[in-house]
Length: 77
Ligand code: FES
Image (cartoon, rainbow, N blue to C red; front, side, top):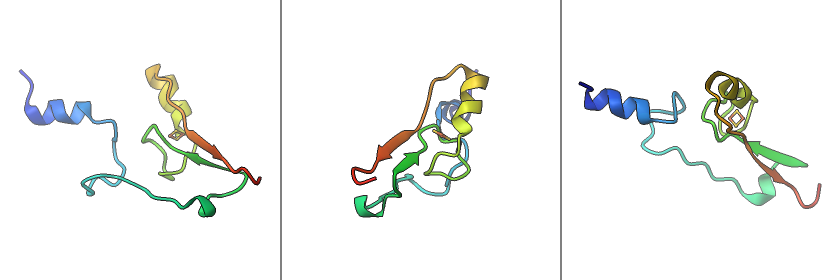
């Protein structure tokens, strides 16, 4: 038998980032993006979230997953 709390916790993809918030959402204005590119985390393991710090590499090796960042390139870079 599984408890509802245990099942809900195992279904979560965010292990630790800003858990006190109801929903983690970030807004960036295009003109504020770093040049030549901005690299955003999509694996929820980065210590620099919402930016990628390469933690997806370890996650993929440990789990067999294939997640990677969102890379936004500046048109004026
Ligand atoms: Fe999460 Fe790179 S650290 S995608």
